Image 1 (cartoon, rainbow, N blue to C red):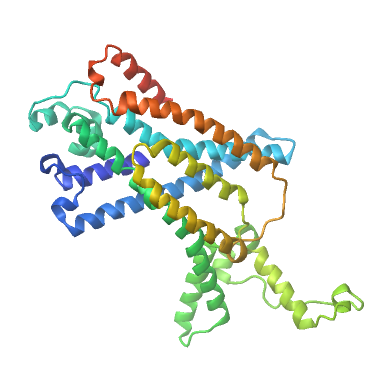
Image 2 (cartoon, rainbow, N blue to C red):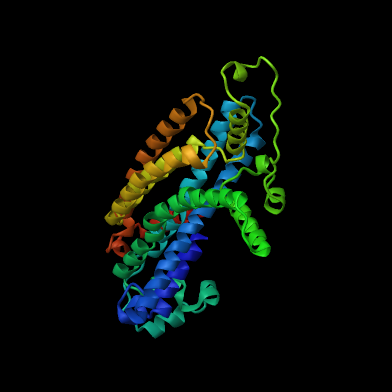
Length: 378
């Protein structure tokens, strides 16, 4: 999916924007403001793809842990977290590793032939039949290495510049608005009954997607039929603890309603927040040498997320039950050690292969190409 997004960005720039002949990197060079809007929309789409893949990897990690059938809950959680982190990490760097080590490097001597001749040579490749002249295989033959490097660096904008803010929007701001909208529509009645029914349904639908836990709220049943805990009556016994504290029936009923509202929210998972720190460390360690500018929006996003996480804990998500921190410490320390070692290998590979303008002169380039293909296929 990420390669498809990168391929679409290449089509925007080099086919629709004609940057092969205009010596540019973005479609706005030819189409102006409309080209800029299309480029930004493509980056936002890639960021949303990252968010979707995050949910998919979380589900796969839980399935992998359940298949292993661990005896202890701690071992099950550790297996789920390990699988989730591994899938997220490979998803973060996999597509860009393919670009960095197959598309960007100068594996063959630079060609001085006209663009029409180079285009005819790649016309027989299967990728040309799918996407035409925008095929990455064709662009690798038609573009000089400096421009291919800019294509690779520009492809990092969506995942590492736009995505951190999209994540804050989708996990904190939109759920907060959806929750407030559901409460507002539940407590008010519009003058038009038709508008009131449509507003209730839309608010419940958004709350089901972004706010509530389906197992607690009833999912589609809540979407179509509304709040399940209506007309709740509290029966008190004489001499109970609350009565001895002097609390009235109204205060007790309000306490019960608060507990029900808290119970239907999605739980606040501290390990998911820790996962964001892991992936942030991965992004900085691997891609900061390629595009140093990404550290600025990532830092701003981390500062902003520190405030939104507090509101998420207090108002948007169900407050968690305190548990032991052994799993968090074990996964964090192991992940940081692995990424610290792999980032050195990655940096050396970028210097020797990706940004090496004389790679085609090396006597061992064929062996390096074979090793690259083996790593990519794995």
